[in-house]
Image (tube, rainbow, N blue to C red; front, side, top):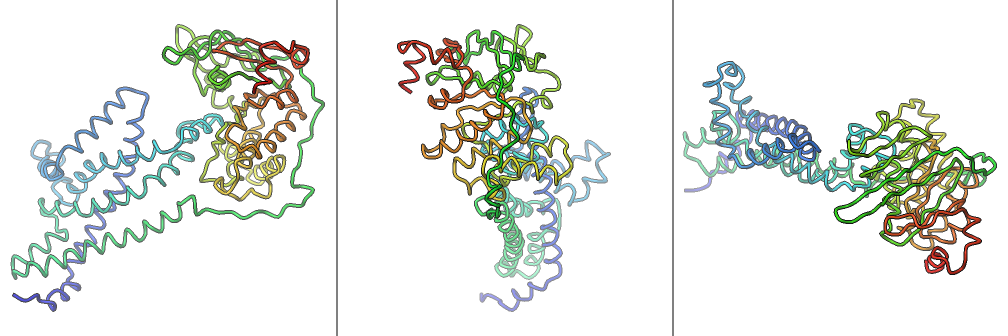
Length: 498
């Protein structure tokens, strides 16, 4: 039997095929869009801190990934037999098919989203926390844009799967592409020619979607995002804030009282007490694993504590006792007075340097875009990066990234700056440019708590030095006391060896 090419070409203009193709495209797009939204919510539920919510999400995903779609289609279509009120909707094959597809595909799309969420670096969550961004704002502005970039190829692949799965909806008499083909070849017995035409229409739907998806992936590809340097007059290349005379006051701005923290059997902090005064530069040093980073992270609640109390400006801030771990109700508003600079920068990769710096003020309600932008440019100028305002983080060196991170923290007008080993991730030749910026802040009178291994820097800028070992504060002395301490003292030996 010869292949009938004339018949095949005639099917290209067959109206029922085009109507069925439009139906399949519409059913596929609706399933994908609704399933993508519900899947993202289910992925969030899968990571919830509430056990009941996690259990529901896990159970849903397990059940509907296990249940064959064909069984689900028949069940949904026949559900009005048990629930007659659903008859007006479920008796329509399109709606019954859409509901069954969404129920099934949501489980698969949730796992794709979960992979995207897991791929976002934990530092992004911490940076949002440090800027006082609430969970909804964090996911909307920071996590979701990055997670979607990771998940998009898999999400697109799932759309292709959905389009192919629409052929199963013919079981409930929906006139999709395969059913139209079946009706044709049962009349004329030209099975091969008809199935080739059916394949063509499925490939057409997938190809059109894949074209637009490729364009979208290109637009969202961070590595393709570039920004040019801005011409900046030499005099304005590195501005400095109007400084005041450096003076350490008597007012205690951060009070740490008897805090402890354990990770399993490891005691990271043991009954640590400290005070940070207004205008003071406090450096925390010590060997690796001594508890330095854990301590500084407790101040802005990036790390919880098991026992103790932390005050901010003399007011309750964080408390942990037999009743549990508690933060003040206005935490997200008050935490902005604590500027945080991380050792791994934690810049938002999908934002330019300028957008990174303006994000915090704009999120917290400053609607004057021009004023926010002007202030951000001033902060970038303070760290010598005004010319790089339109560049993305991947276009910057490590030292430049860290200086943008400092500008981002300064944009919130903090009372206190926290630096967690700000130079540890930098090449040696880039360390100096970051330390120079921090020294400038010290001269301006900024209150700072700095965890660092740069001992020469500690000697130059510190008003007080704290040394930790095994979770304990073993030395707490002023810069003058440090200078006059015996050469064989533990802290002097450590500083010489570091």
